[in-house]
Length: 158
Ligand SMILES: [Zn+2]
Image 1 (spheres, protein in one colour):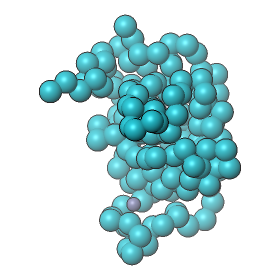
Image 2: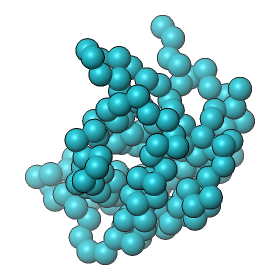
Image 3: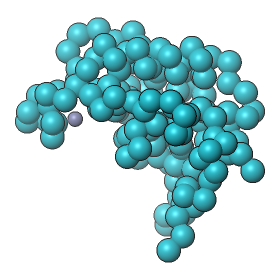
Image 4: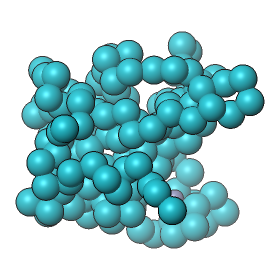
């Protein structure tokens, strides 16, 4: 079995927004984005409650964003906790979604109030949330990666 994302050189990967893969499903193309928030194997990963809260906040924002909501297939954390996967309908490149991600991470960084859908009926581990850390991580990624993103943060190392 070959899994394309396992063949990317994680030792040379920067934080960024990458196209992980494209899949043809019927007549549609689905683009999976690698939203890489931490340098793999070089810095501490996202704390689990933080990445979990960030997942909830990103889902709420992306699924209600007027231009993109109907293209959002999935958003969720990577098992390694260095970032998130976002699957969108369409044949897309990283530059197509930078503004969307800026808005999404700004929404998370500025969020006030109760974490959305963090009740036991709505979430599989509803006590495992940390809004303070989620906001911190969202702001850090926005400030240090998204705000002035470069080509090398949008193309995997060759
Ligand atoms: Zn949850």
